[in-house]
Amino acid sequence: MREDSFVSLSQSDNRLQISVWHKSVHNLSCQIIVNKMADHVEFIALERERILETFQIDLQQEVLQMLVGS
Image (cartoon, rainbow, N blue to C red; front, side, top):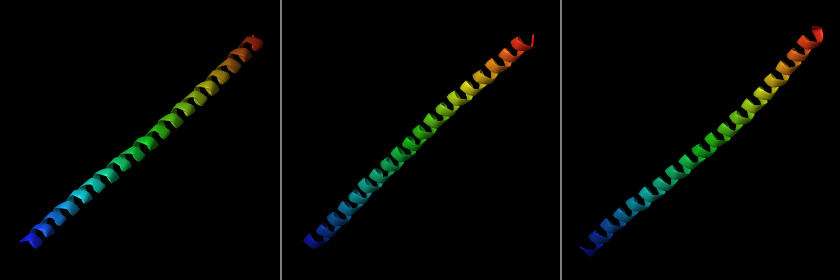
């Protein structure tokens, strides 16, 4: 009986280790996804600022051309 209980405990132990490992991999995967999303959000924010600056410069040039043309 002791051998059976050892095997049972060992199998249970392995399942627990696999479960913990699986949870760790899942958490790491989630962290990688969150980091990638943060990178994308930062990139989008920078691009938004660049577009707004370009639009503002274009608008200022258009206003100046209108004033000089008048």
